[in-house]
Length: 144
Image (cartoon, rainbow, N blue to C red; front, side):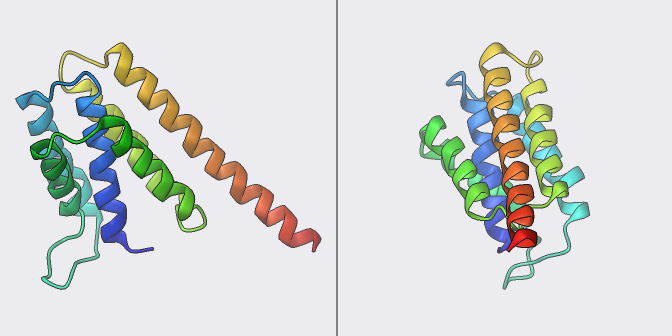
């Protein structure tokens, strides 16, 4: 799995969280930039061919989707599809980071609203299913 792709997909997830109510506020944008700068960049060691920290792809993807007024559900589903396609490489740290930053962004503007809570609960459910797939695959490999 390319980490650049993970962060692009994370940008889609965060766009979905911010735009679930069809309005992205300046507070939410600032929160996103702060999350990338203060949490994602310091913990990421991978760079792209231009020596850019790949965590910045979260911000770039978010901005692109915001400018193009992308479909929230499609952005969320893209992240989920990515996680499912890469479930063997999607480790516990990536799972925690995804959930943490989604919750943090949801809190940015007057706390988490009902639509954001539903989306985050759906994210939790999907991430938990990924873990179940991994366990089943390990059991299957041990048996055979």
